[in-house]
Length: 231
Image (cartoon, rainbow, N blue to C red; front, side, top):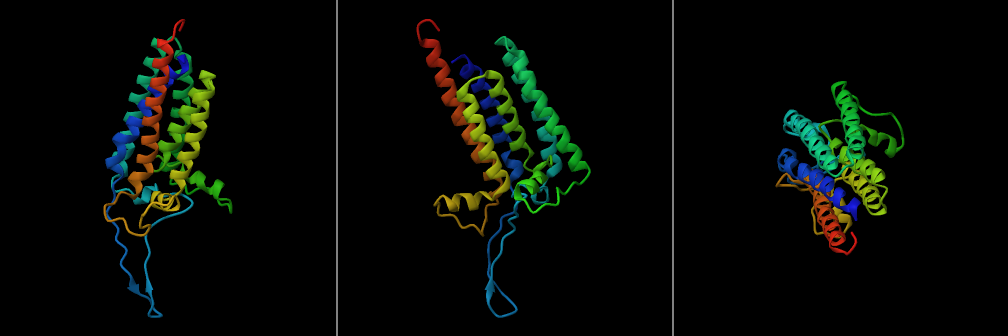
């Protein structure tokens, strides 16, 4: 239960930072209007990319503002996690996670600056490495790596299982269109039209919600552990 009491704070920090970034992922609305084709038939398309994901930097209205936000978030979030774990007497565990987050962010920053376009491969898994662009899907990758390292450091099955599951969720929403995912799950979503411009926002909002819900569960588990005799 001690691991849950520490881990809930990491989940909360990551969830809040993702949630606060959501306005920066709003885009111009897209409405699908059929247009006559050369053959006289109607065609309707929407700007959805794969496998590099919907969170491509070319779709963002203010990528510079998003870069600045995540740089500040990395510093503030790393400081908060380090302080929390030090107070709990486990500062080294936070240091490992923050170091991985900083390293991954540094790599993605260099690749963005170099205008890297990924590996040439027929494998969607290899091509998805193009997600390592700082103003694209990087936040999901950094959060997933951070939580995984912290879970390993905690040596607790619960946090580890969640971290692995979140990494899978992060990969899905970093490589697929959120509307497409919701449509596949049976939601009544028009995968072509996005008049509100929230397609990219949902790719961050759904993982953020998962983190905040998990944080509440971890906090409850930790509180329950404190209330038991001998804990």
